[in-house]
Length: 174
Ligand code: 4NP
Image (cartoon, rainbow, N blue to C red; front, side, top):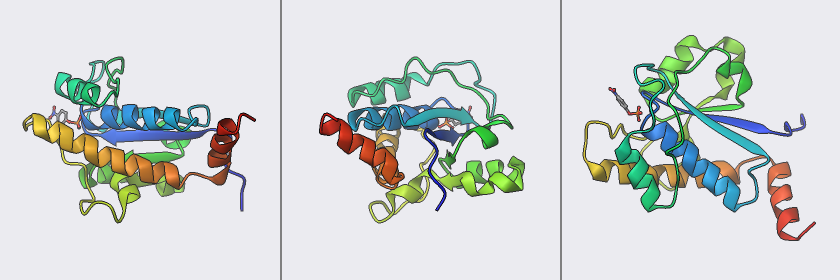
């Protein structure tokens, strides 16, 4: 078995990078911090559509996240870049359309990095996609957060033992 890299890099991807993927970035970062894993895993987000690049997250996503104590307001939207396929170890799409968009431009050697985020919530949620809340109401943003929380818990649980060992060591004060 190859040794896991010292830092695992995760890229959350949706369409506009103003609703779902910044929420997913903020939620995963917060959960990693709670578990003492911030130093082992880096998280970023991007959109397959660049129309909102340079903008802050949608205010509805910011306030739905803030209600659960996730701070995403300092993020800035950007479009996925070719070099992201090399840089990141896990590239996690919110839905099948965005997964397909990634598969269409990802070099063959990096295709294995592409997944649906909801794969990691397996068994806990019947939906494989995080639905786009942009054209809906406030409840959609809360649903998105709930789904992402489940998937992030599953994602952290499957991280290489090394990361979880560093967590245990930290808790033990080593
Ligand atoms: P996101 O939501 O992909 O979760 O950031 C959307 C943001 C913007 C648009 C669609 C979805 N839009 O059509 O501009």
